[in-house]
Image (cartoon, rainbow, N blue to C red; front, side):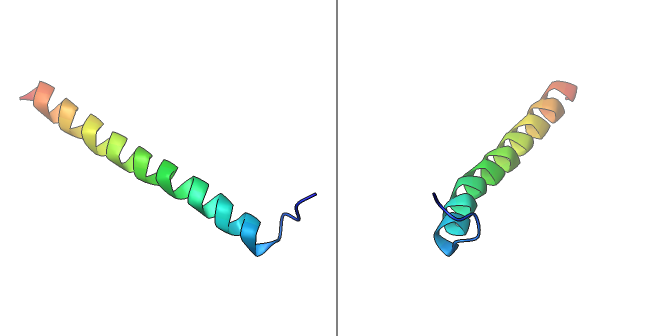
Length: 40
C-alpha cells in the first residue's frame, strides 16, 4: 500500500497533473483562436 503522503506519490501526482494542465491551456488557446477565426 502506497502512502498518499509519500514524496514519490506527490511527485507522480504532479507529473500526471502538469501535462493535463498544459493540455487544457493549449486546447483553450486553440479553441479561442478558432472562434476568433470564425468570427472574422
